[in-house]
Image (cartoon, rainbow, N blue to C red; front, top):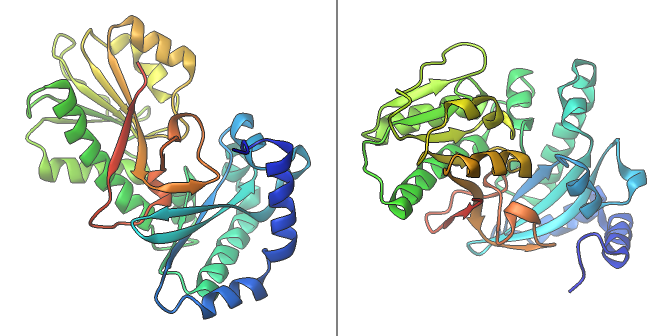
Length: 298
């Protein structure tokens, strides 16, 4: 099996992009997509250097051009995966608004050409696109919130905890966090504590066991380690998974930590690290037959 970052793999995708990453080719694909076997197009970005080097040569880093980087198959439908090789800090930079508009326009153009039903974006991109009024639809945000609710059910069952255990949501004021809080309140019997670094920070009493869901930035849980008690359960949805240092700290408190991998699906190339065995929430489509996957990190 060719590894994602093997010279042969990277060369293969360089050649593939040279040959087919063009509007005329996506138009041609669209001609054969009458039955909608291509469900969506998905844009990712590397959260760190480890992810970046898995999908492209170093000279691609920092470029705003969209590259075809994978093929995903979930519940009988194909998802075309693309990547823009810029960092989160570049995405957040206000001066790059026009560049972000351009990649959103390009993804919409590709979606139209292949006749896919939707386009989705990874990580912080949905929030950026919504805040800057670049797009008004975020199917990945709605689906992510639904998957988080399902992940809570799975974790409760796996750990044998009661339905009324309190739930803390980190990042409650974020784009996805607001949806997660609303959906949890509509289906859970638990008390929901909405927490954000700026604003509301009410927690359950320290002696009470709780579930903590991180839908903020990936290492946000590190700011709240002193609030943990033995037996607490952490569920991480943020991209990427918490660092090894934070995982070790959580383990020292004798707490369980789970990462939401996403949805069961096939991927070429296969996703790495905490996303092995599936595809991220933001890449998936809302099939009635989807299977949510969680991974225990401690």
